Length: 200
Image (cartoon, rainbow, N blue to C red; front, side, top):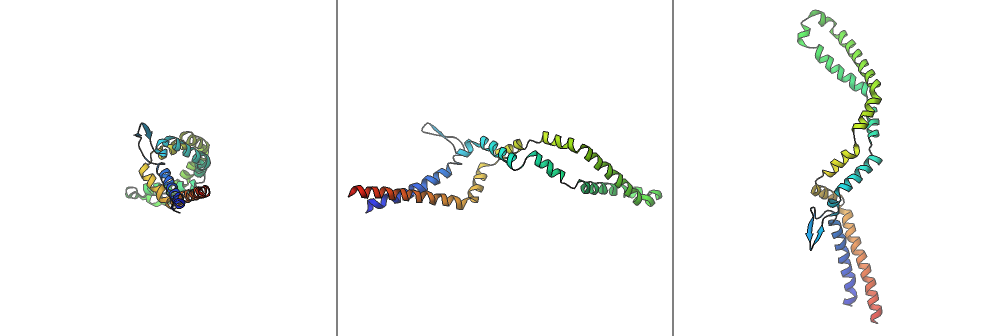
């Protein structure tokens, strides 16, 4: 009876441990270690550059490209932002106490400010509209989303990344361990069945 129970129990333990070890070996060891002449390093640290490049390329192609950023920039309310900025600058400059000392400027300042704001806003928007395509092309030419993402991903602290990932996937990782144990247990049951059958 003990011989029949041992294979499923050992199979469950080995299956759980194999999955646990496989998950750990994704990250560890972080730095290359020589064991009996064999160099060992976690899969993610070892292939970090390739993983960074692949992830960055996938993000740029599927999620966020320079073209998408350009479209987002085009959707900004430039008129509202420019009007607000010009209004702040003009109000600040023409509300100076030194200018208020001059009676003529004091009388016409409100009317003057309105016209200056209108003309500056009109010219600024006209300039942006005229150069919009050239600015978009320059933006696309100078912003390399893939390289930017590669540098960011490659610069991640592996220890923090591993901790964050394992915390985020804690329940899924536990399920993988249980799955390995279940598979090992079932294989052990099959082995016990074979032993029992031939032991008759």
